[in-house]
Length: 247
Image (cartoon, rainbow, N blue to C red; front, side):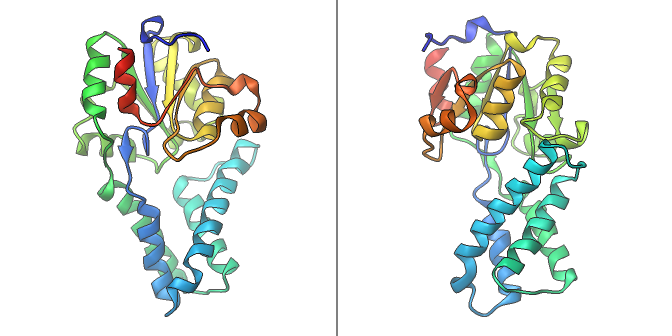
């Protein structure tokens, strides 16, 4: 692997959740509330429900990536919750699903904190003169709200969420809009994210170098086998803060 340096780039683009921020597993809290409305024995169905929720949410994103009409993140979450309840044999009134969806969305903002040492790293990046941007697949309009709440907005000049382009990473539209905003080319722009499919596959397919923040113990060889050698990230780290060593 080529020795990595930030000096070859004009801009750096980040993912939001679990990269810049720690969302503290807010979907778990929302899911526990929802299950409590459906059953007196949450413990017996929780693990299975959560597995279905992850699969159903990811399937909802992938369907759109593969050509299905755009649906908002909130709509995808709502459908994933309904399908996951059905999969574990639970039923609930539509009003409870609506409330659970609202809770899911509210907790995304409420529980997010800055990932360890990220702000110090962003300040150092900014001091080098690099332009900084963010792309997220998360709830529409939450990106700048969360960055403002965490006092990180000042580091970034460009922001893209799915609603801006009616598309999700790894589709090209979010990446195209961010480089247009930054005034850079793909080859001059580095992407940093934690989700291999959305972030690394998306960025490399668009022509960007990518750094994988492998904070959940993923297997790089497995990812390369699944998505192809062309998606190989230029660097793999366990946390964004490790990248300070390359400045």
